Image (cartoon, rainbow, N blue to C red; front, side, top):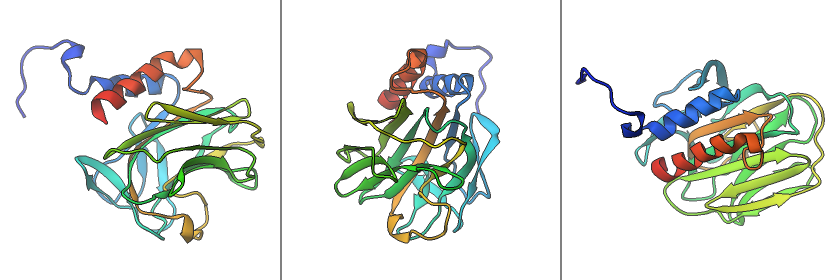
Length: 236
């Protein structure tokens, strides 16, 4: 590696959007699970090495896909991860996922209490991208979108679900949220090995989680929104 004996302005760095997003995510107590090639026993967050997502069932596989390292999902196989108690208050949080799929990927992301409760999950279906609760009270839907990679943002706050992608938003009111912490699930929606029909094929290159913050609406999240938008424009 060539090392030069001088510094350059931050604006000249090619990864400055990632650096800004990583820094601001750390500052608000969030995490960024960023894919790397291999078959890891755990998936540590790039922003907090103590936050480690754990495999749920079949051994996960990370491999290059369209110039990025990504978690490879396989139809009918649970190769997802669980980050235990990642969401202290399931009534207010937001997340984003960078993913790719040529066919419906089905289960992409979920926030699920340890026992009972009302899990929330994001699914890529033939009918569109759906963010909903298990009770069927609140459901937001958008078109699946196009492009080699898609950056989807979720927010849950004040009994409302919001789904955003490609400059579009959809919301749903009336969400019932039970008390108690919840797990973050990546690539699946159940803590059980079953529910095979919800497990599709796709790739996940990154997941962000911001507990206690509505990144789409909160005034204090303005800088973070800007950093995520910059990442989308320059790196997706």
